[in-house]
Length: 130
Image 1 (cartoon, rainbow, N blue to C red):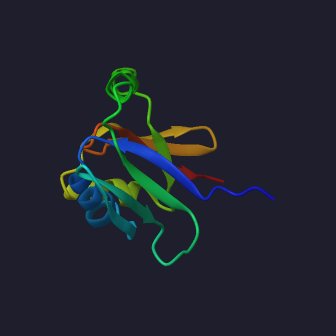
Image 2 (cartoon, helix red, strand yellow):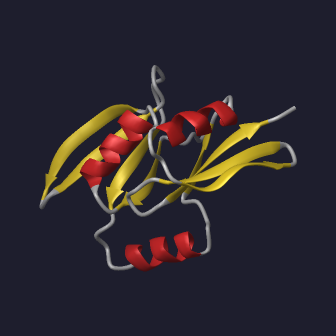
Protein backbone atom coordinates (compact mmCIF):
# COMPACT_ATOMS: atom_id res chain seq x y z
CA UNK A 1 0.00 0.00 0.00
CA UNK A 2 1.25 3.48 -0.88
CA UNK A 3 0.49 6.31 1.55
CA UNK A 4 1.22 10.01 1.51
CA UNK A 5 4.04 10.60 3.97
CA UNK A 6 5.29 14.08 3.08
CA UNK A 7 4.06 16.90 0.89
CA UNK A 8 5.54 20.34 0.54
CA UNK A 9 4.71 23.96 -0.12
CA UNK A 10 7.37 26.44 -1.12
CA UNK A 11 7.62 29.36 1.27
CA UNK A 12 9.43 32.66 0.83
CA UNK A 13 10.31 32.94 4.53
CA UNK A 14 10.61 29.79 6.64
CA UNK A 15 10.41 31.56 10.01
CA UNK A 16 7.28 33.48 9.03
CA UNK A 17 5.84 30.24 7.60
CA UNK A 18 6.59 28.37 10.84
CA UNK A 19 4.75 31.01 12.84
CA UNK A 20 1.80 31.19 10.43
CA UNK A 21 1.31 27.44 10.03
CA UNK A 22 1.67 26.71 13.76
CA UNK A 23 0.49 29.80 15.66
CA UNK A 24 -2.21 30.91 13.21
CA UNK A 25 -3.41 27.77 11.42
CA UNK A 26 -2.80 25.48 14.41
CA UNK A 27 -0.54 22.78 13.00
CA UNK A 28 2.07 21.15 15.26
CA UNK A 29 5.75 21.69 14.62
CA UNK A 30 7.25 18.29 13.83
CA UNK A 31 10.81 18.90 12.65
CA UNK A 32 13.04 21.97 12.53
CA UNK A 33 16.55 20.99 11.46
CA UNK A 34 19.24 23.42 10.31
CA UNK A 35 20.31 22.35 6.82
CA UNK A 36 22.96 25.05 6.45
CA UNK A 37 22.94 28.07 4.20
CA UNK A 38 20.03 29.56 6.13
CA UNK A 39 17.70 26.70 5.14
CA UNK A 40 15.86 24.34 7.45
CA UNK A 41 14.06 21.01 7.16
CA UNK A 42 10.87 22.42 8.63
CA UNK A 43 7.74 20.29 8.87
CA UNK A 44 4.33 20.63 10.49
CA UNK A 45 1.52 18.14 10.96
CA UNK A 46 -2.00 17.69 12.22
CA UNK A 47 -2.26 18.25 16.00
CA UNK A 48 -2.22 15.01 17.95
CA UNK A 49 -1.79 12.81 14.86
CA UNK A 50 1.31 10.97 13.74
CA UNK A 51 2.19 10.32 10.13
CA UNK A 52 1.68 12.88 7.40
CA UNK A 53 3.89 15.97 7.45
CA UNK A 54 3.88 19.18 5.41
CA UNK A 55 7.35 20.46 4.50
CA UNK A 56 7.65 24.25 4.52
CA UNK A 57 10.29 24.23 1.81
CA UNK A 58 12.53 27.21 1.02
CA UNK A 59 11.51 28.90 -2.23
CA UNK A 60 15.09 29.53 -3.33
CA UNK A 61 15.13 27.61 -6.62
CA UNK A 62 14.82 29.97 -9.63
CA UNK A 63 11.67 28.30 -11.00
CA UNK A 64 9.75 28.66 -7.74
CA UNK A 65 9.06 32.42 -7.83
CA UNK A 66 7.46 32.38 -11.33
CA UNK A 67 5.49 29.26 -10.36
CA UNK A 68 4.17 30.82 -7.13
CA UNK A 69 3.45 34.16 -8.80
CA UNK A 70 1.54 32.43 -11.60
CA UNK A 71 -0.59 30.42 -9.19
CA UNK A 72 -1.40 33.48 -7.08
CA UNK A 73 -2.15 35.63 -10.15
CA UNK A 74 -4.62 33.01 -11.37
CA UNK A 75 -6.10 32.50 -7.87
CA UNK A 76 -4.97 28.86 -7.68
CA UNK A 77 -4.28 27.45 -4.19
CA UNK A 78 -0.97 25.66 -3.65
CA UNK A 79 -2.73 23.08 -1.46
CA UNK A 80 -5.97 22.43 0.43
CA UNK A 81 -6.68 21.72 4.09
CA UNK A 82 -9.85 20.12 5.46
CA UNK A 83 -11.90 21.81 8.18
CA UNK A 84 -15.02 20.67 10.03
CA UNK A 85 -16.69 24.09 10.29
CA UNK A 86 -15.50 26.51 7.61
CA UNK A 87 -17.62 29.45 8.78
CA UNK A 88 -16.18 29.24 12.30
CA UNK A 89 -12.62 28.74 11.05
CA UNK A 90 -12.98 31.66 8.63
CA UNK A 91 -14.24 33.92 11.45
CA UNK A 92 -11.38 32.81 13.75
CA UNK A 93 -8.73 33.46 11.11
CA UNK A 94 -10.19 36.81 10.03
CA UNK A 95 -10.07 37.78 13.71
CA UNK A 96 -6.35 36.96 13.66
CA UNK A 97 -5.83 39.22 10.65
CA UNK A 98 -5.61 36.52 7.96
CA UNK A 99 -6.42 37.83 4.50
CA UNK A 100 -8.81 35.79 2.37
CA UNK A 101 -8.99 36.05 -1.41
CA UNK A 102 -12.20 34.00 -1.43
CA UNK A 103 -14.72 33.95 1.43
CA UNK A 104 -16.55 30.71 2.25
CA UNK A 105 -18.29 29.71 -0.97
CA UNK A 106 -20.58 26.72 -1.61
CA UNK A 107 -19.40 24.57 -4.51
CA UNK A 108 -21.67 21.56 -4.70
CA UNK A 109 -20.58 18.97 -2.12
CA UNK A 110 -17.96 21.27 -0.61
CA UNK A 111 -17.63 24.76 0.85
CA UNK A 112 -14.27 26.39 0.18
CA UNK A 113 -12.40 29.53 1.16
CA UNK A 114 -8.95 30.69 0.05
CA UNK A 115 -6.42 32.51 2.22
CA UNK A 116 -3.01 34.11 1.75
CA UNK A 117 -0.38 32.31 3.84
CA UNK A 118 1.90 35.41 3.88
CA UNK A 119 4.72 33.29 2.41
CA UNK A 120 3.88 33.33 -1.30
CA UNK A 121 0.91 30.94 -1.45
CA UNK A 122 -2.82 30.81 -1.57
CA UNK A 123 -4.22 28.02 0.60
CA UNK A 124 -7.69 26.54 0.25
CA UNK A 125 -9.77 25.48 3.24
CA UNK A 126 -12.48 22.95 2.45
CA UNK A 127 -15.47 21.56 4.32
CA UNK A 128 -17.37 18.61 2.89
CA UNK A 129 -21.13 18.98 3.25
CA UNK A 130 -23.91 16.44 3.25
